[in-house]
Amino acid sequence: MGEGERYEEAEPPPELRPFIRCLWTYAAPNPTGGVQRIAPDGCPELVIDLGAPYEEEGADGVFRPQPPVIFAGQMTRPMAIRPVGPVEIVSARFEPDGARDFLGMPLVAATDRRLDLRQRLAGLALRPGDPAGQMAALADWLEGERRRDRWALDLLVRREVEAAAADRSAPARTPGERRALQRRFADRVGVAPRALRSIHRFRRVFDHVAHLEGEAEGWLEAGLAAGYFDQPQMARDFRRFLGCTATEWARDQVELARRLASQSYKPGVAATG
Image (cartoon, rainbow, N blue to C red; front, top):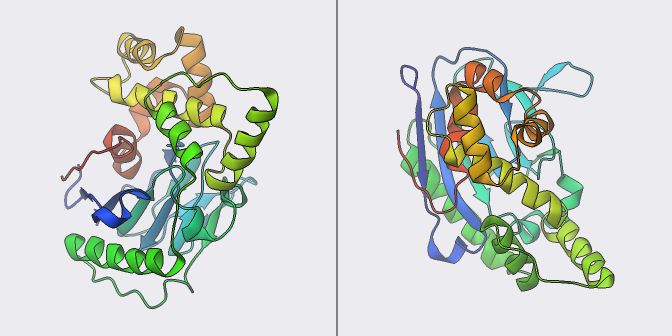
């Protein structure tokens, strides 16, 4: 990592674990300023930026500042961001189906959107330069939200989410059962079951590749291990989810984009660095 750059993860308290996968912080006092491509990872996020908020590229190609507090819903396409000053972030990564009661609306309403939550978190004070304290304070605040709103899970959706993460085949369902499950996924997850499985398969590429340096053989081997039939199939998903080839991404992506791709999406991983 660059000078002064740090990334840390922590597990949430037991009461939050059914809903939140991990808490994480990231800081880069002197970011490069380059455009970074963030791929879908199947998990919505609550992101609080204590530094200079990133700029995000809109559909019109114009970069605009993100709000300093956002709920980032499920993504079905890449997000392009660039830093404009010192970065310091604290975030909660929800389970794919864990944010419905926190958000208070169907997750499909947040898909491919970043919702401004500044007013909702106006009373939460986070001290800059204190990653452990930041994560603890955010966890305490979320636990208060959980108790107040009585968060719950849809167990059928959770079983399907777990099957997708483990790459287990879905049980046979009638057309009516499939449509009902899709409606429940729109409400609890924000994307269809098939789309979530495609995102998980794509993210497994980064789990399997040993060195993200762009060698064609390494990427192909990782793609096959992740469940792709061949290189063209994987290449289509790189275009779909990152907007570039594997070698272009490995060559150009640094800082937060690389950290998020290399480890933080993995279930049950806690890392520091």
